[in-house]
Image (tube, rainbow, N blue to C red; front, side, top):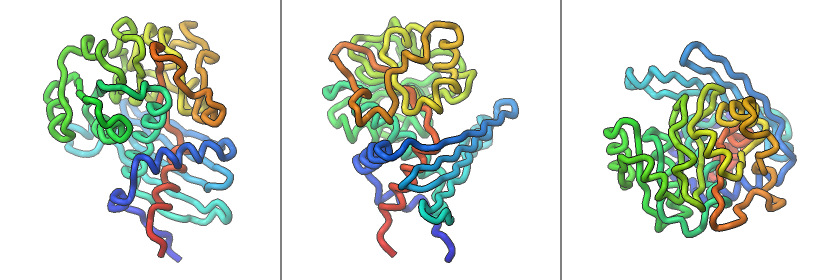
Length: 304
């Protein structure tokens, strides 16, 4: 039998609460086996990620990141997702790459914010104005419905467009906006820090999404040393992403400064412990999170 293709039309069946619950449940299963292949060709990247979770299944996701596509009016990120049956290893579904990526990336950060941000957060700043940045508006609003959301972008026109599309506001003074924000999400491809630690106010939660290569940084060393540090998965972040690998290599922080990842959720270690502490979560992704998301999407489909 031909395995189904789950396309973008399935999005109407999905919900942020359901996804967060699925991600938490996935992290109560045995720890995933994961492996990555990262190949660069100048500014272009080919990233292939695979995961196996006992009791859930197997998945392979391959992504291409071509920054130059923006000039061509083409998507910067493309790829394919294959989901395999847990019991037989047979191909269970082909799932729309952009659907999985959108919900996985935003759900990852939403889960972290629900655990680390103050529940009474009222100001959310999103740095960047691309697809991921825009998706974070709906994700955050599901958990912080009373919060005001604003975009900052290097190109103000980009922030204006993102705000118009999502019903958010814009800011032009990044330092002032950082100082006033309760939650800050960075969704850029910056190779040098945009957020300075001395701008941060007590109680802020930082959600770092964009940096995914060893040469990328979105916050400076001071932000890292002021915050309690968390990651979604140690294996996919600590030694592989510049946000952490670079300051670890220079002795600014140590790998042991990362307090917890999502597999520590059942123990309660992945949590805020005071109203005034600054928390920082690095969203590094990983095929195990894609697997949990793809399995959630498939489970949302009506039975044949």
